[in-house]
Structures are given as structure tokens and as C-alpha cells.
Amino acid sequence: MRLFFAIWPDDPGRAALAELAGRLVQVAGGRATPAESIHLTLEFLGNVEPERVPQIELIAGEVRARRFRVVLDRVGSFRRARVAWAGSDRPPRELMGLQADLHGRLRDNGFELEERPYSPHATVARKIERPVPRAPIDAIEWPVARFALVVSAAGRYATLASWRLG
Ligand code: 2AM
Image 1 (cartoon, rainbow, N blue to C red):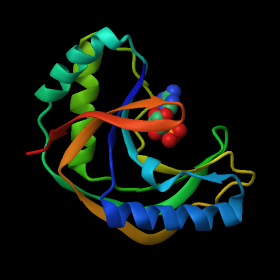
Image 2 (spheres, rainbow, N blue to C red; image 1 turned 180 degrees about the horizontal axis):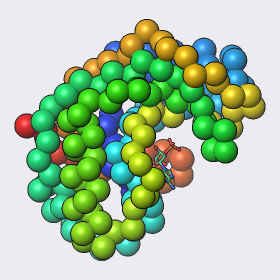
Image 3 (cartoon, protein in one colour; image 1 turned 90 degrees about the horizontal axis):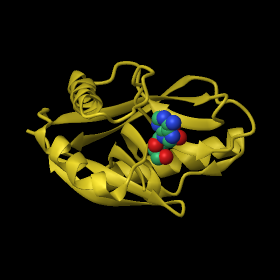
């Protein structure tokens, strides 16, 4: 099963991101991410044997991180992946700490992970036809009290489990 760890927006954050997605596809073409799918990836696990899910859940349960606010205040796009995103130049240290802790624990347990530096972003459009110039936006923010293990199947996401932040 295809798994990743993510942070879900709250309802106002989701609505603001969906609205932004609609505006960006006007500029860049492509397809807006459906509102219910918009998230911030923490760690992409890729294809994992279902038998390993309990181990992944144990590892996630050991992560210790503080609550924080996500603030997404810029847009841009990844040219090769042809996605448009909302992101942040200065992500909160708690978010970076959460990702680093989770990443380290998963890696120590033999999971193969993305080793490029973590660049927090919410993908709001895919298959874009033109790049989105990097630009500041009115900040979209929400308080984060949980992170989630998510399964991706048939183009839809479902939360398998989630953990509270301190
Ligand atoms: P994206 O939004 O930038 O495409 C589910 O597919 C989530 O995992 C998405 O947030 C996606 O990021 C991310 N993802 C997919 N493939 C990935 C990869 N090879 N490395 C890192 N993240 C990936």
C-alpha cells in the first residue's frame, strides 16, 4: 500500500487552499487538487507491505513534537513535477523538528525515505501547463495538533491513524 505521513488543514485552511487552487489553475492550467485531498506531506513512505503498518504506527507513536501553527505565505511551482504549491520560506521550527524526528526514526528502522531536504508544501494543482511565478500570498494558517498516517488508493486519501502533538 502507498503510504505517507501528512498534516491535514483545518476546515477554514482547507477552504482557503481550495480557493487558492482555483485561482492558480486559472493562471497555470492543470487540475486543482480536490479540497478534501489538500495536505502537507511530512514523509513519503511509498509502497509498503501492509504487514509493516503496525510497526510504522509504533514508530509514529514515539515521535515527540510540540504543537505549532502552519503558515503558508508563498506560492510557486516545481517545474519537473508540474505541480503548483503553497509553501513557506520560514517553516516553524516545530514542523521541521517533527519531520526530522519522524524521518530519523523511520530511517533507523530500515524504511527507505526521500533524502532531499524537507521542503514543506501543499500541492494545490497538478499537471500545470505554465510555471507559477514565486510570489507572496495572504497567509493561510491553521493550528496543528495532530499528524496522520495516510493511505493513497485509487487517487483518494484515507487516514489510517493519527497522533497528537504535545
Ligand atoms: P506532492 O504533493 O509534492 O506530489 C501523496 O502522493 C503525497 O506524497 C503527496 O504529498 C506527494 O507530494 C508525496 N510524494 C509522492 N511521491 C513522492 C516522492 N517520491 N518523494 C516525496 N514525496 C512524494
